[in-house]
Image (tube, rainbow, N blue to C red; front, side):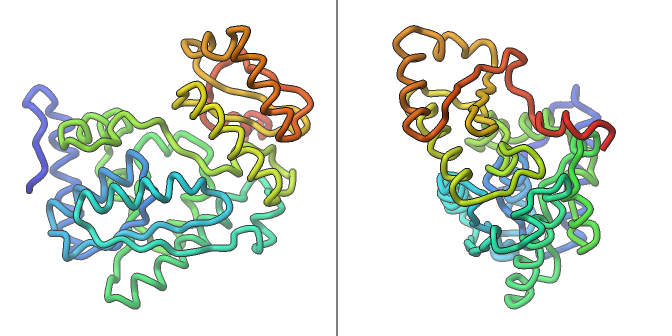
Length: 282
């Protein structure tokens, strides 16, 4: 199946799509660092469509920093696309530079993840590794992109100039279930920088978020861990689900069971990378 072209009215996006195809065609055979999110799913689908599933291999790295539900979703999506998919284990908390949670934690984490994939991919004859960074990522604080550049990992979506909105639209046209999926981020992004990462706080965050997702049906939200305070970020449109008397009381009880003494709703709403606000000009 070839990728679906955008209508003529979206000429700029058509040009970007053509550039993406040229980049993938020049690589010929690729391994994909696959998280199961919007960007990496579209990249995986685009590569499989253009190069053939036999020339594409997806890798997901599972660690204490990633909810297992995301790994499971990645497995399901790769299966739907007919692409061979492997899950690699990483003990992230055993890496001191990750566990210490410095502002450049993502650099060390991304480097460990990508090195693990590069080794596994090379063992199966895949010389090129690609990941799902997009054009919008250039405007955010993402030290992990430095690790990718140092290791020679390509970002075809970014190189083609595709934005997040364009990738969502292309994903919708391609029929990918991830087209409107909320952005993902590892559990460590819920913990203030320089607060050590431990199994205890990561498991607490995961349990709190699973509770809100299962009980209230929330999709786009974060539980920021300022232990013993839980700061919930959720779009204002979803506030009523949290603030009804019964649900509010139930959330307080459940979060208390997890160890939180205080539960706060952030009036600024959901903000990607809100922990970066404390970094100033970083």
